[in-house]
Length: 77
Length: 420
Image (cartoon, rainbow over all chains, first blue to last red):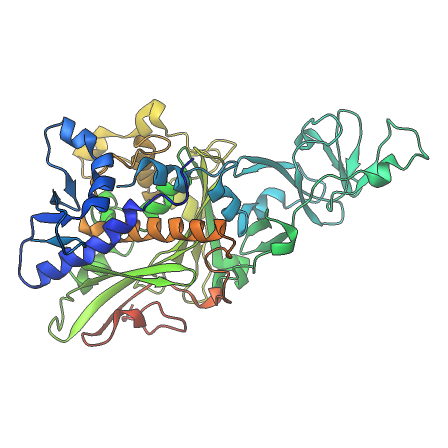
């Protein structure tokens, strides 16, 4: 059983979705999401099977790109 | 997509934190019709893995007790329901609806063993054709969720009850996943034609808003008429811990619909689909069960589980598919459950690939995980911090002016309607 203090992957997704929708509303066609270290680690821990299949790591249809540079919140492009 | 730990916290209910939180809500235990007769057959029920027995005594009082006799733990569901109580057939110990021991014939009189013996009973209520119970601590009994349909005359409410061989969360996620309807149920939904008349927009904008009881979300489409000045909004409600209110059909003569997914254990769920009148007319229960192909004894076994299952590949009919059926599976409940059971009893959500249209699933998981975290920190379960007007919660759909917030649809209070 998980520790209740475990960071939430579902919160990462819930916060990311409006960024994607907003980008689409601006007429952009985002393909990548830049994730700071902590959310990136959460995603990577879950996505090993995708990598084994030769797929890029995808979150909500966007390819995940790690960064440790500011800003320390996700952004899409 | 969830981490393995999040998936476990959300799905495990038997002797698990989520189950402890769920016990703090009133839940359906069975249909009233299953225990309609005084001195009738006792009914075995399992909720959160806990074995229970429901019976109606000689005087018509309902009781729900721990299933096993406290003496040697034989099942009271084998018992004789007679003369104001249920008697264990093994040694004759007898209990009333409140769990008091009425008789203990194998023990000598005069030692007060009987007077001190109890089995555990639980609060219950009959409403909306269901027997509801509360399995949490007595000192934290939750407010009863008095949805409008729980107050309607029985002839205005019809219920389908169907056992599903999956974890409850797969059922809940199906209920709030509106995008699947356009595919899985495309030849089954009863107001499809009417909805298509209102809008043929297949790419709705999805928005969600947290509410004290859970959240509601809207699928917002361009209507066929006046697309520059109006929008077509369909709102679904998620009510913790496992109820969904589906948008009411545009045709007023069609019943509205609520879905409740009660965990039997970690890998089985009892689904209650409630159909209730929008216009005050009767809702024919037998007809609803036939329409959905979930007729007891025909489509369902004696335990309400579907005869269609993975062993017979959900009775999918390929010939039917060649002749116009999209799925080859009859009835929308069977279509949902075939897909959900095909995922496996507890789907590994680390392997899925959600899209931006899956907003409701993502939000529900987040809300429930956050509610669980707060509950473990000593806070009340979601929806119990304030009084919730359950009788005014609605799934709904309307065409509204484009500048009007979508939140006006399915808000507390009587909704206006598209002409039916």
